[in-house]
Length: 137
Image 1: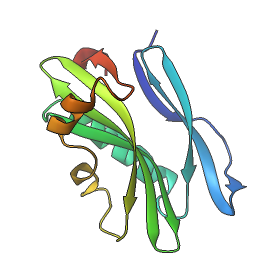
Image 2: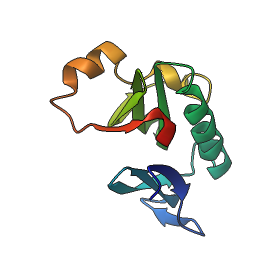
Image 3: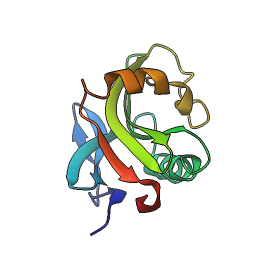
Image 4: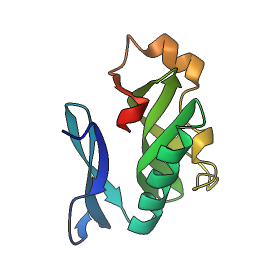
């Protein structure tokens, strides 16, 4: 069984809330969760590039995230990420929804958003958190 996976699962985009959208799926151990990827800000290639970079980043940094949804609502961005925090050889994951009122959220800056690693440790017992060995990513 694959411990971690993130992928596009729909072949063709369809309109959801008036926005072309494709479906993705993330697997973290026993968790399998589907998500919508709006295409009005980021294209499929952008999401996939970010995922690849995020998974490489967690090997050398204590924090990374995979961005699963970026949607523009008349100038306000609605963003969904899976934060990844590394402690030793364990990576902790949790799902976060962000609001960004400006366009500073992009492939280079996406790691500046989300809870801090210190806040994540405080919240770990309060929010759903999954963990995997770094070698399983």
